[in-house]
Length: 358
Image (cartoon, rainbow, N blue to C red):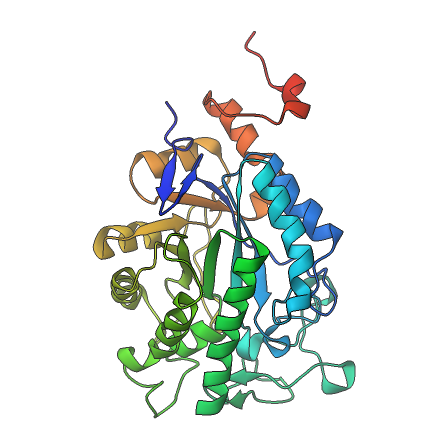
């Protein structure tokens, strides 16, 4: 029996396997609206056998977008297309999830195929916001605007309103994006947060913004549906956020009702030194799981069936999230099932392509 293809119950949901499609920006929206690209992209991976499909970072406000081409959920008008997407995913025995995000000082950029550079105001870019007025790159024209208390409260309200819309749109898993140097992570890391008020300085102060967002979100998100938080387990930079702080945060998040810590890393500063290699972020997921006593998701250069199988078999994480490998193979779960000799259900339209033993 395959461990990767064992079920996992998360509150009221029963995941048919441990394979999750990780949130991956498509930079294909206009004014935050999803379109047929998103329907086909996400729907194809539901057909491909993954248990959970988490939609890309979806901005809670226009200024929270990484680029002008990001998805958004700041308007009720966004809901209609999202409903079509979630309905399709559910029809194919998978669950739709959504990652709510605010890019903070890393907002207002071009898509990666346009160099991923900062947009100027003349190019319809916008001023960005952050916990402290520190540029991500030294050459940027403007430092981000330091958020005051009113600005912080507005963003918390935006996350709350976005959660209500996500529920109406049919998402069954909600993930808060607290990683990769975006706004929540900017508050967590001492390298980007140099505030002297109740949101800066000590560990307890730097996690306050995330906890207040979580509390607001939980007033809208049903208690019987799973809630994830994605973190960067380490900044890979001296003096930054690190694995010890991640474990302590995970303990608090578990106590406050979070179900899964989605363990990524990096993104806070451009001078990070990441030791990239197969499964390089796995030790973060393993340590958070064991020391905080909370379920975790592993991500990061996990590309092979047996590699993923061993992660679950050895209790290193509870879910395996696939990003680029899922882009390369939309049918990744079906492919892995064949390689591992695991039983899984194929779409009836594809059954004639099931590999047969010879």
